[in-house]
Length: 260
Image (cartoon, rainbow, N blue to C red):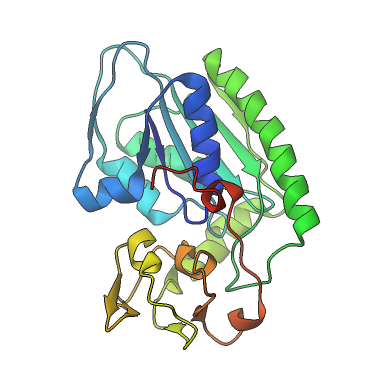
């Protein structure tokens, strides 16, 4: 089983490639949380994987909370791996995730990071298409290497790009980012076509369509930015700067090659 969390498709694409290569099933963490599905029985030889993005040099809180509450049934010691996708570096993301696993009595056998295009348009503009294409091409090769390592059940094997000042960024910058995970800055313009996609794809379930327009019903969200980046009319904004910035969606979501 591979559990994944994804807003704009990077982590979903990585998880799907690994699932296809390993013959494992996929489960969306956001969906599992909404349905209260925290229980899984591992079959003999079944690997357990987690794929998720890096948010400000740490795992999304929804991912670590899910892992801490996951109720597993298995015999023997299951092989457990994790892959985080990031725009440049992961900091202490894998260490934080490993700590969450250990709180649940689980041991992480291997961990990896994969550099992919960044989607944080609330902080900066999207990358040029050439750079995004280059990152995606390199990510495919990185995932091929990760797949080989997992198939061999390599234990105590970690290939994570921490980056410069990674520890500081994870311990000092991330808490500030988490405090700012508020929905108040979200708003919708008159360009909205009332398609309802934002409500359907919201990972935290905090968007409701009211009189044909999205309304954020909770004070806080996962800040996955799926609603902004995947709005077909570019009608959703966050604060004053996103209107002039681009949007990013992984090709796997653009082509409809998804289980969502």
